[in-house]
Length: 53
Image (cartoon, rainbow, N blue to C red):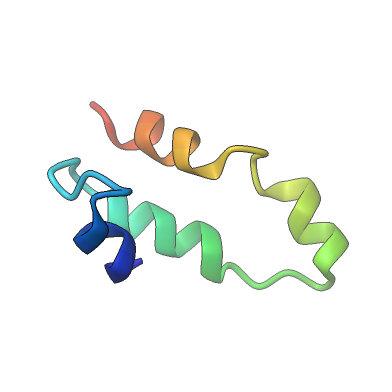
């Protein structure tokens, strides 16, 4: 995550963006298939939409 902020791939000025992203990416999944079905296809877009309030 930190590399994405430093490189500018994720806008660090968005409130809670790191918190939401880390929650999505560290949530325990039983299998890789389960994770693929529960993570949005474009997680970056979802994270940005979720954090803009």
